Image (cartoon, rainbow, N blue to C red; front, side, top):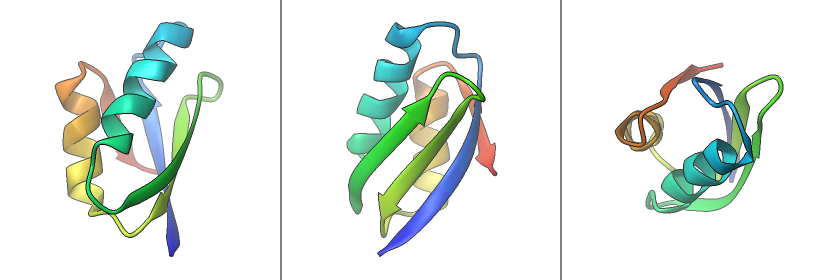
Length: 67
């Protein structure tokens, strides 16, 4: 199992945090997700593909990059 850290931009509230977490949890290979509003990041535990994680976040309307 590995940890993938993503920098997330565009989140402004706890609803945003939950939306990003739910999107990431839907990606195959994700075991656990920790999303924080400040400093705007997500730590994904598991063996998910980084590109798939970024795509899932962007489909929710936020920006993501490997951090």
